[in-house]
Length: 293
Image (cartoon, rainbow, N blue to C red; front, side):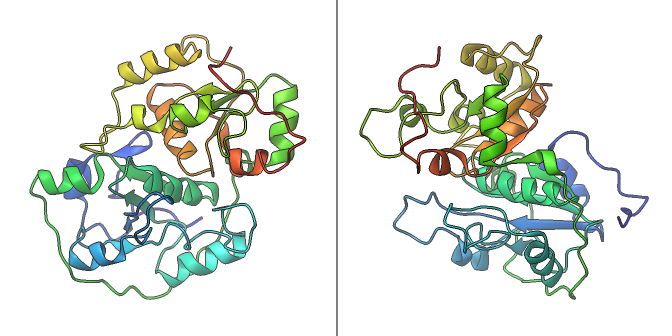
């Protein structure tokens, strides 16, 4: 793997602060990705390309969260692209596997977290900008409408297999006592028999992404707050389960839960990419309703 330039000190953890990014905007190996978007339920465009054209963090590259780095041919929504497809798209955007990816959005961090997870899965260093676009603007930091054209690069993938879990792997893991944390909104997790898209994988615990991130500021909750949320969900951070896998509706907001676990000092093994949309597609697979336990 191409090494990061020596003078760039990698920030610890899954996040970078606006202070850190502001001080490193001109670093040649930092690649800022603007992944602003809307929830799939929105009637408006799900990727905020127009908003990007009106203003973004200097040097940021626009990423369409529904299409870039996604296998659009897969019947399961939003599955990560194949290694070749991912490498081709990343290279075309001028990104090398030795770059430090910093992704941001303006919706609970779910799109930025998903793209950062995708890069981590394929071997790159990636962070999420804590606070995202909203905090960046509120702090009166620089913004521009200028688009930077970067020369194409070669991106070499190195798959970190445990970060992505398949249906078969999750079925085997649940049989062996794995703990699933479900990042969907609580009302979907609780669900109602007969209501499409509701309920949860048997044994899963509820850890909604809206409680892990402040929707008004885009800032992640403090480590202490996340620890409390984990305890309320049924996970003791002092004695964490042997294996934790994050899930959600389509594998997107699960990446926020994975970040929150890391902030709280709890190891999250990976993300079930197909998540509840894949699990619930087969009526033979069991679904639970109501509160966990």
